[in-house]
Each structure stands twice: as C-alpha cells, then as structure tokens.
Image (cartoon, rainbow over all chains, first blue to last red; front, side, top):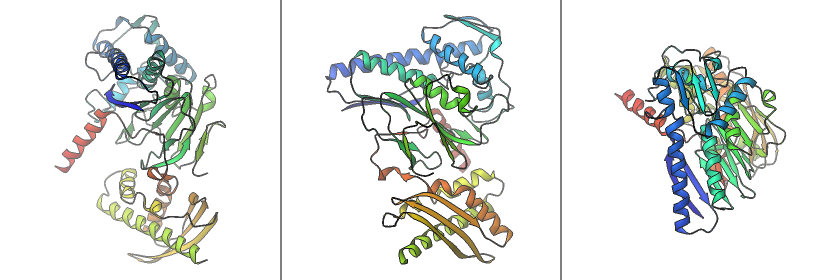
Length: 287
Length: 153
C-alpha cells in the first residue's frame, strides 16, 4: 500500500492506495491532487486572504465569475436552501465570523447578525451577481466536493482500490468488509459503533472540538444559536459532497425533509440516543 | 454470584469517583459554564469504565445499589448495566441521594456519564478508518492552543 498525507484547505488529508503503482505514477497523482486543491482554495476558502470569496467579501457587490465547480456547489446549496427553508445557506459566513469563527480564528464572539437572504444574489453559471459584499461560506460541502474530485483523479489514473480521508470524512473504493469507526465525539478514544462502507462516502459532523463558548461551527440562522440537542451526525452517500452537506443539514432539519437525496444517516443526540435510517450499515455498541 | 458482585462494586466505585471529581471541580470553577466544567472534569476519568474487562460476564441485566460516604455523610446510588458480549450496551443510574448537594452531583453524573460507559476503546478494535471530527482544522487547533497559553498567564 502507498500512502501520502498532506495539509490543505485547512485540514489534514491522507490518501491510501492499495494498487501496486510506480513511484512516478504516484508523483503524478500527487501533482494532480495538489494542483486541484490549490485552485479550489483560491476560489472558495474564506480563510484564504486572496481567494475569490475573500475578494467578494471585501468588494462592493457586483458580478463575479466562477469556475465550473460552482455549478455543483451552488446547485447543492440552492437545493438545500429551499428544502431547509433557508437554514442551510452559504450566506452564513458573516454570522460565523461574528461568532468568532473568522479568518484569524479569533474565537471572540461579537453580536451575531442574521444572514442575508438568498435573494441578494443571483447565480447563473458562471456569473454570480451579488447586491452587496457578503462573506460566503462553502464549508458545509466544500470538503465533500474536494473528496469527490480527488476520487475522480484516482479513477482517471485507474487506481482500483483506495481510501481518501479528509480528516474523518472518507471515500472508500473497493475496500471489502471495511470497519469504519464512528468516533464518540465526547471521548475520541472510543467509537460508538463500526460501519461497513464501500464504494461510497461517509462524512461526519460533530460539535466536539470546534466549539468555543456557546458556539460551534454550525449556527442556526434563525435562532443564531448552535444546535444543542444533537452532538454528531454521520451520513453515507455515493457522493461525498452530498454526504458532507447532509451531515450539516441534519443538525438543522429532520431527515424526512431531505428525502429527495439518496443517503443513509445516523444521528447521535446529546442524551446519547441514536436515530438512524433503516439501512445505515453499522453495528452500534449500544441501544 | 461473586462475579456479579465484583462487577457492580467496580462500577459503583467508578461512579463515585466521577461524582467526587465533578463535585470538586464545581467548587473550584463555580463561575464557568456548567457544561464545560462537567465535561472537563469527566475527561480526567476517561476510559475508567473501559479499563474494566467485562468479557467473562454472561449477557444480561445487572443491578445494584452503591453506598458511599459523601462529605455530608452516607449516600446511595442505583446502577443498572446491560451486558452483551462483554460490552455495556445500556446503562441506567438512579439518583437516590438524600442531601441536596449529593442530589445535584448524582443528577450531574446521571446526565454526563454515558459517554464513558457506552462504546468501545479504539485500540481494542482493528479499524480501517475512523469517521469523526476530532482532526479539526489546524487554524482552530492553533487558536485554542494560543488561548490555552494565554489563560495560563
């Protein structure tokens, strides 16, 4: 097995390749992956001082051109914005920043603002027309999109068996009888169960670590509070962008609202009660 | 029978140690938010239940009352465990304290202990991967570390 690890878009990555490949092929794969991630960050990261998103937040509104990736990313945000009555929104950026989750990670909460409505912007690929400067945040599915693109790169290179690990959000290709531990968010030396995931993605969203004061990285735009009744969500889907986005959406709405997506879920409530879809492929170590 | 007794004694001792730790840190950090304090204090006892090996025990439901001496005098707590293949799959704590402060401590314990009881230690299982969010963005970890250094003064 060949493994390479690196840091990008603010998180740690590890890619395990089970195929027997040459060093030069591995180098080529690395090059493609790094080049994709660097392009991606230069557009969508609100933590990158030179990104397009930063430029929009510091501008005066107007028209901005996006690359092809925006079709899928804006697409999923607009679908989920509708399904969640505006709770799942890329316009949450300024709210997160004012809560302290800003570019410098000051973690000092100021008075929180409700996010702007979607109607202040109009996206028709490739142009985003926006009425005023706002901080867009694509954090709810950006990593998922990146995982899918890395999977695509590995497929182009005809790698038959691999795992893409973006710090606990995963895609597994041809890994039979996999045992993916579901980390106990309140005691990370433990898992609450084990899932068998293959040829699909499993993503997690938990409120354990990225929490400061009363806020976490998820804030409900209506109540301006972080969810308290749920401590972790796992989602499984063929595409990582969907698994990733729904792992956040499930903190905000009931699973039944998201029926138009094909996915499995497991929700861990703060009293440690579990709610999961019938086919979520996991053994849970308690009731 | 003897085994059952050992098991329940061990659990009750663990429960009491956690209650005592929780209560101590309450007095130390009375101004901090309740949630934080109880989480931090319980973290020190992380894995306590898991150090106990239940693999020799038969599947079933085990109940007992635990007696301990609080700073104010004798108190009691009820503990029920459900074992399956050597793992605690369910548990219940019954608050039986008489003194107000002990009732508070036992309630706090009852609300927070589950995370340490249910589940399995990662190093006990051969896992392909772990899915979770403990490996969070580096920027956040850095910021927390800086705040920690600052807080130490």
